Amino acid sequence: MRLTYKGHRISISMIVYLIFVACIGLMVSYSLIRIPSLPAQNDLFRITNRLTAIVWVVICLTFTPGLVYLAYISISYLKEKFIIKTILVKGKSILQIIWHNYRKQPLNYLLITIVVLITLIKLNLIGTGFLAIYDEIRYCQSGKAVQNLLELKIRPAIRAIYFTQGRPVDAILKLIPITIQYITANIYKLNWYESDNSYPLFFYNFIIYCIIIYIHFKMSKLLLNDSFLSLISVLIFCTVTNSYLYLRHALPYDMSLLIFYLVIYKIVIYTNENSLSFKKSLITGICSFMGYLVYPGYFSLFMVSLFIFLFNNISKKDIIKRLYYSGYYVLGSILCLFICEKIARRVGTSYILDAKGLSKTITQG
Image (cartoon, rainbow, N blue to C red; front, side, top):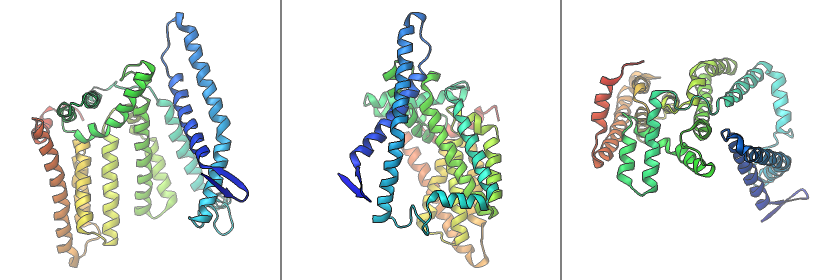
């Protein structure tokens, strides 16, 4: 299929091909560079890998300008045909608009630049510290679940997910990076859990971290109603220790925080706009308890979200209605707990009993 835009002929298949080459090239380049050191007698093999990586990088850099140009033409075509005012606003390009806004708000853009640089610097943490903390051993349960699923052993896979001390949803979500680690480990003859094969988990954590930053900015802007103060808040958040620590480890904290933060953000919007409904209340309750199932240590955030649900922007005439919707919020949480417990009982275990015994084993924090 070909599109024509202002005399330019665009091949959709070529765009897809270039994207594919760029993605595969970057993945292969990084993977080859991260291959652990080999014995001296394999120096030739190691050098060959490095040269291959360099070739892939050169290929990616060669294709990138053409890919960007084709993407620009394609977006421009879509703008004219389907999406009005996507690229041009009042005759100005996006770059012109950014430069105009930068001149009007230089401090804001300076803060954005600093936040982006701090975030990019954290990419240097790839491959360091993985599985150094005892609590990360639960990540191996996701690996066991993948092994059992590959052998079509469904019950053992579910049991492995529930053998995480009250964190079944975290084990389910971590099936994503551990599956990628399984693939890369088989391709490059690495151990599943060695540091040189930990970059899928790192990028999984990095994406979560970036989304948290975005939600934090949106929440700050909602409460402070000031972009500059919101960016200051984001900058402070980017410099705290946990934003560096959790990126390197297989811990559930950031994912649980993301879910709770998103739930609280949505609750504040719904209550401020008085747009609560049965469906929104039920879904919010389910999502809130999902955050608890990722990491039960954040149970206080579950209580905070319920408190905000009940009392934020409440008036005397809305008390009964708010209590009514709060009932559906609690119902959604109970429904989530019931489904979780029902699945656990089907494989011969109990989430409730595990959670009950968990509080007696905590000796830290």
